[in-house]
Structures are given as structure tokens and as C-alpha cells.
Image (cartoon, rainbow, N blue to C red):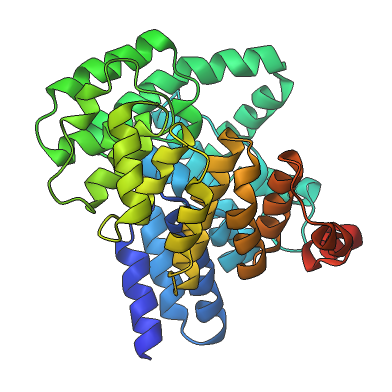
Length: 360
């Protein structure tokens, strides 16, 4: 019962807009765990999940809500509820848009069958028609038209996330901003005084390079070296090469008082010989989830730096992680650098990840 209560509480309070990779996945896993518990142990967990869904009306938060779990929770009834809610949102916000992936979210149901169910539900839920009409318009768009529409809505979506919701910005919207729009947000960032005001801007500049002097970022560094705020800053700074950033990265390599997230600065400030230092740091990580998160950062470093120096850290990752995709990526990066050991090359076709892909 303690576990069930903990899941209910987390469903009610979790920040679903947290842009950290592991946190985003954890939210999805949490909600699907809630569905499983609701089906097999305690239906009140499902009620909590429905309440959270119905109360999520902020655009940024709704975009991150894994609403497929509502269809999984309630089947066709959940699909109707989600489509009706989307229609109501589109009616109130004509600049919003939703795709049709939700039509594939009811287990065992084809998209055409899901569409038929929604069409039959229109007389009692007329807002569903608004959603269906939008799907048809989106499907009729050319790729060029779609790109223009998404670019046009990106600025307002990011602006809303920062100024109204005070939340992390959606990655797909950040990636569509123009340079002038990035400069607009940089100017607003400079005026932000508190860390809380700065964080939504930093989530943006963790996706797109800050368009002004990186000194603006460095001077906001917190004296609490391992704070979550500094983590946001490091992600924003990881696009740049500078002596002061190399100095910070060096501290992360040699001083355990600095959190592993500072290693991200090596992406643009790497030196041969860093590989051995990386292994010394990451070999001390005992928590599997923590290692997985750091290992993703290490792979990003070697995506930016093709060097034989990658062998030791990537080999350590390959032999440590249980994630097949991560083993495959480590092998790909070693291959790119020309250092993949023959033994790994011979065993890769028999890796669980490779065999699973072959079966599919």
C-alpha cells in the first residue's frame, strides 16, 4: 500500500515539463506504472491520473503529458476523452496543433478503427470534430507548409513557456527559432535577476547556442557549484570553446567535488589524454541510473571529438551498461575513430540489441 500511495502522490505532483532526459522518461514510466497499478490493484490510482490529465491546461505542460497512457488506461473511452479534450483546446487556442499519433495508442486497435470510433462519438462530443478536421489539414500539408507553420508557432510557444508558464521550453520549438528570435530571448535573459527567472531561458540555450557573449552566462554561475541551476548553465555553455570553460572541465576531470555534469564542457574543450581521466571519474559511479545519464554525456563528447583517445572510456561504457542501444552507440563511435577492437566487432552481431532488431 505504501508503494501505491507513493505512486499516487507522484502522479499528482511530478513536474512533467522537466527537460532532463532521464526525468522525461521517468514521467512516462511513472504514468504507465500508474495505469498498471490501476488495472491490477487499486483503481483510485487511475482516478488520480485522470484528474492530472483533466487539470493540465497549460500548453507546455500538455505537450509533455504522455496522454497515450489515458488511452491505455481506459481504451476506446480514454481515446474519446483525449480527442474531446484536444478539440476543446483547439477551439480555445487556434494557434495550437496536435498530430494523429494518439489514434495508435489503444492497444490492439488499428488507426482506421480508432478514427471510426471518434467519428461515431462526434454527435455526443462535437469538439472531437475540431480535432479530426485539424488532423486532416495537417495530413494534407506539404513538408514545406508544415515547416513554415511550425516555425511560425515556435516563437509564441517558447515565449509562453518562459514568460507565462515559467517552465522549460519544448525542444522542438527551440530548434525552430531564428537568430533574431534567439537574440530577443538573450536580451530578456540578461535582465532576469533571480535564478528562478533565469532557468527557463537556460533551458532554451541548452538547445540552441546563446547568441551573445558567454560572459553573460558565466557571471550568473552559482557559488553552489553542484546546484541544479549550474547544471542548466553548463548545458548552455557546452556549445562553446573558451579557456575558462576548459578550466572548469579540468576541475570536473580531477576534482570529485565537481559534479559529473561539468564533463559536458569537454564537448568543445577536449584534449587528448582526457579519456583516461574520464574513466577514472566514471568508474567510481555505483548507481546504474546515474552511470547511464553520465554515459550519454560521454557519448556526446565523442560525437563532437573523433579521436583514438575515445577507446578507453567507450570500452569501459561498452562493458558496463546493460542498455543495448548504448553499447551499439559506443561501438559506432569507436568504429568512427578507427579503434573498435576486433573482439567487439565479432560479438556485435550476437548482441541482444542486434538480435532484437533482427527479429523485428
